[in-house]
Image 1: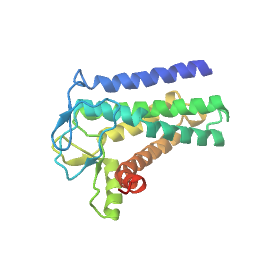
Image 2: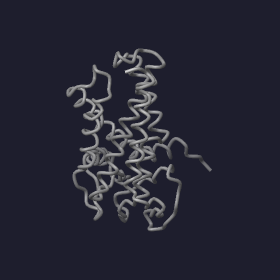
Image 3: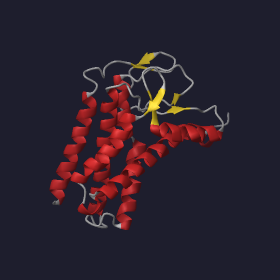
Image 4: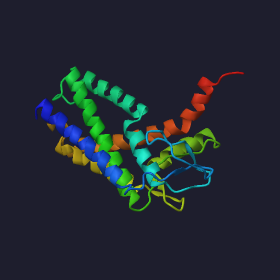
Length: 230
């Protein structure tokens, strides 16, 4: 497939993912968010969700929060920066070889990664809405370090339901595995196979675990690094 055609396909898939996730809101995205204290507000859709604590009074995820989760976990600065790193790494190793170790190859790798994230996040947000699966991560900052690490791993595979209970994150399983097998239809031939799809699925869960760890520990590191003495 030529470069222009592949870019058009990637752009189309990105737009489809945004429309799919937004469609799950069914006209409710204007509803205000509810924070941990029960107060309401209407922050920008691109404003990252505040870190959620597991021991706080649980409020089920709102349609607007679900859309904000999709947007900030797809085109948020941290996720876009992560794409630059992984795409540069793939370009340096020239994997897959069809793209080449060039700037256009870097662009194709970045676009391919973005379509995967868009598709996966859109699937998790929309499918999970059918049974109220909450895609957000919930911190346990007052627990010992070992317990927090175990919590990071645990919430890679579990998600909250409207009642606040943690159950298997079925929408996430569907999204990560489904997205990586679906993407075989537009990936470079050398990685469009079952073995690579399974490898990408494993990497997808590892990436979610890393994202959980960032949400769990970054607020503490930020206070430590940027704390200003009065």
